[in-house]
Amino acid sequence: MSITENIKTLRNEIPKHVTLVAVSKTKPNEAIIEAYEAGQRVFGENKIQEMVAKWEALPKDISWHMIGHVQRNKVKYMAPFVDLIHGVDSYKLLSEINKQAAKHDRVIDCLLQIHIAEEDTKFGMTQEEAESILTDEKFSDMKNIKVVGLMGMATFTNNTQQVKDEFHKLYTIYNSLKTLQPSINVLSMGMSGDYELAIQEGSTMVRVGSRIFGARNYSH
Ligand SMILES: *Cc1c(COP(=O)(O)O)cnc(C)c1O
Image (cartoon, rainbow, N blue to C red):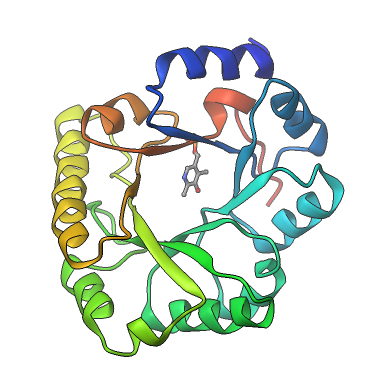
């Protein structure tokens, strides 16, 4: 299957209210152009330098999402253009994004990453940590960020029930945090292996890589 066909198939499968983020990490610009020509405009990357290089080279109407773990000292490189940062896992990071966004007179949309998986290799905060950020008085002073939702990753397992339970837990947290913060209306959950389950459990944004572009080759 070609990238074009994969995009078309996914478009037919995914409900209209769910945003498809095409995860293009490690893939060359030509692959992104093929997806772009099939109508895809939202792309996700997990390394800031790689995203910056692609942003410089590719059409300017692409919406770039940072889906990976973010190092605070690199926020400045993506602050001029990034549309959504999925992996915000601390107050300190949010505050750095706010500072860098202000330099460009922008408001950067952010998702708080919630830890729902069994593995502790996955980043993210607890519901309580997210609540304490949203209710902190300093939070309302941050005019150059907007928390628009939550992101989470399920455990990497064949146990469908466990994945379903973890997504359901995140959906419950999402509904609860919405009452604290009315700007919350995005729930980023689901990847190539589990996006159908994630959509059943209330996802509004799926991050799909290999299902579009094929398997990734890591040289490192
Ligand atoms: C790589 C990655 C994806 C996409 O993974 P696939 O299994 O290839 O769809 C989604 N989310 C995050 C955070 C990733 O790092």
